[in-house]
Length: 367
Ligand SMILES: *Cc1c(COP(=O)(O)O)cnc(C)c1O
Image (cartoon, rainbow, N blue to C red; front, side):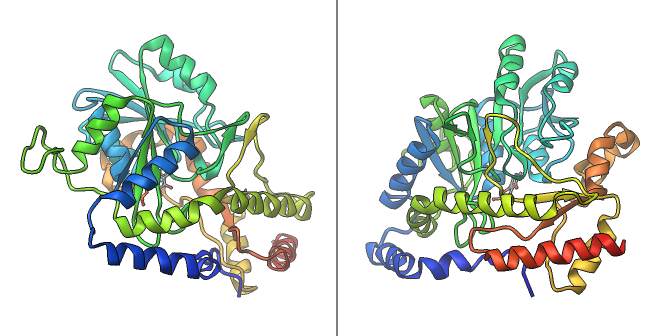
C-alpha cells in the first residue's frame, strides 16, 4: 500500500531534534507566544524574504487577519480563484467582504491575470491569488493590475513554502502573504499553525495585536481582536524543520520529474511550471476525464490518491447564494471533475513512485 502522504515521516527523520525542541519549550515554562515564537517569526521572515512575520493559529486565520488588518470589509469585493480550497473564500467572507471568483489559467491552475483585469469593479479592494498546488501565481502581472487599479494584494501561500519566481522565494511581494503550517503542507507543524509575512511594519504590528485579543499591553484592548496565536511548541518544531525545507522541496522536484518521464505519452494532463517559476510541488495533480475510474483502479492497486478539490466553493452549500451563477466558472468545474493528486512528499521513495507510474499506466490502458 502506497499512502497518498505519510505525514509522520518527517517526524521520524528528525525525531531526535524535534523531541529536544519540545522538551526545551516544556522546560521553559513559557507556553503562550514568547521567545520561541519570536525566533521562528524572525527565521521564517528571513526565509520568505519579508521584513516581518507574525505567527498565528492556522492558515485560515492568517488570511482572515490579513483582510482585517487592511481594513477590507462589508461592501468590498476581493477577487479570489474559482478553483481553490474554500479557506481562501471563507477568509474574505468572515471579514464581511464578498469573494468574486475568477477562473484560472488552464496550464498553471492559478488566477488568470487577463480575466482578473476584466473582473475589477468600483468595489474591488484586493486580489487574493493562491499559489495552488505549489505553483507560483503570476505575481508580476497581478501586481501591475494592483498598481493600475489601486488594489491590495493578499497572497494565499498555504501550499507554496519555498516556491520561487526567478531567484526570489515568494513571501515578500504582496501587502500580506498568508501561510499555513497544517501538518501535510510543505512546511508542516505537528498540529495547527499559520503565519503572515509582510514588508509593512504597521500591518505586522496590527496583526500581532489582532491575533492577541486586539491587545499588545496586557488587559488594554485597542481593537476587537481574536485569539489566534502560534503555539510555541509548534514554533519550536517548525524551527527544526525549516532548515530542511529546501532539500525536501528539491526531493519533491525530483519526484515530479520522475512522474513526468514515467507518464509521458499517456492521454492524461500532466502538471508543468511556467517559465522562470519554481514549483514547490506541494501536490502533483494530473487531469483526466476518466478521473473517477482511474482513482478507483489505483486504489485497487494499493495506490492512495486524493482530489483537490472535488466540489468548488461556489457549489458548496456554504455558498448556496452562488448556486444560480455556478455555470459562470466552467474551468473550475472541469478541474473538480478531472483533477487527481498522486502520492507526493519528500519521503516518498523512487521505488514507490515507479509503482505508482506502473499502476497508473495499467489503469489508463484498461480505461
Ligand atoms: C491548507 C490551506 C489553507 C488553510 O490552512 P489551515 O491551516 O488548514 O487553516 C488555506 N488555503 C489553502 C490554499 C490551503 O491549502
